[in-house]
Amino acid sequence: MHQLKLQRLGPITECELACSHFMILTGMQASGKSTVAKAIYYFRTVKDDIYAVIERRAVEAFQNSSSQSDGLTRELLDVLRKKFFQLFGSSWGMDQDMRLEYHYTRDCYIELHLRKSLDYPTPNYLWIELCPALRGFLKRGDHSLSATATGIPDPQRKRLQSELQNIFNDKYNIVYIPAGRSMLTLLAQQWSYIYIMMDEAQKRTLDYCTQRYIERILAVKPEFSGGLDGLLASYGTGTHETLGTWKTALALVDKILRGSYKVEDGGERIVLENGKYVKINFASSGQQESVWILNLLLYYFAQNRPSMFFIEEPESHLFPRTQKSIMEFIALISNEGHSMLVTTHSPYVLGTLNNLLYAGHFRRSDRQKQAADLFPNSLWLDHEEFNAWFANGGILENCMDSEIHLIQNEKIDEVSTVINEDYDRLFELRHKEDWANASR
Image (cartoon, rainbow, N blue to C red; front, side):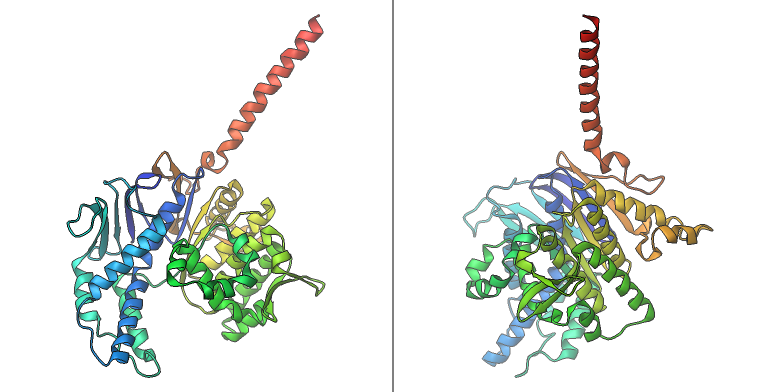
């Protein structure tokens, strides 16, 4: 099981967690939820960084008719440093005790910390320590690919990707869906032009997760020209169970978007039930926030490509009932073999997840059918594959009740207690005022 150890990074003073299939991070704003999510994302994408460096070197070697036998490890470390700074900012303002450690397996791990360097004029040089297993792979891995005039042969590509998945004990394609999606969706028509005109230095000024999110949307958007139904058809009809899940997913999409998504004449649209449509830049902020969560999850589900999704604040700009629907949608896709890490501030998100966890307790019960009438069993969550964490005061606390295997009630709607106490005080004050007036 993957494990993260984090010390003195951003708002987080210390945390240690084991990654599960479905993870929830909650807590006050600026408490460190995104810091932890981005730290996990940083390490889970190292296998993609290695592949990209090896592929680039293979293409350059073919174009220059020469082999690049040295420098793979150094080039990878440069990529990892740049990625760290794009995710977390400059190390100059960081605590010198900052440390990150991620274990993929017992023998495969990466450590990051700050140290003084004689070669660089900074007291906070980011030092990246690769385990012996990774260093050994990198020594022999530069020749894993050999480019041709038509690119990298597919068998080579698949073989290297499979080897990296085995080394890192990670079969998942990694997808980060950041917060602030409505603004990116609002500018969807302009992003193609804006992004193409940006040079590499300008692109690096974007937050790393946002940059990758934009690139992913630009790449997959043409796949939606036939709408959501056309998306599944283009990747095959699937099994009977897949078609059942797809039908459930589309019903939830309709609840969330009040329509269906389609790309037509280069423009993004929400197609309404009456056949009319709304251009995406005129859609509601809730539709703009949620549309690409739905699209990306459906895209990789249709491809049958196991993915790990990092989703920041899926509840943004959504009515409470719609928050329930989007979490049911996320649970549905998770149960199809996709992993989830979700950050949230919403008690409705946490309450929905608790209901789905509670329904999962009926999986081997005589009351299974009655429970399925309340919640389709395709939405039920398995508590053994689920965990929830609460960021507070620089510490990440596990907030699962170990006896009933649900998120602790006091974490779900902590503010309600405060609001109710304030109301009780006001009510008591009004009662005293009425009593005093009656006594005169």
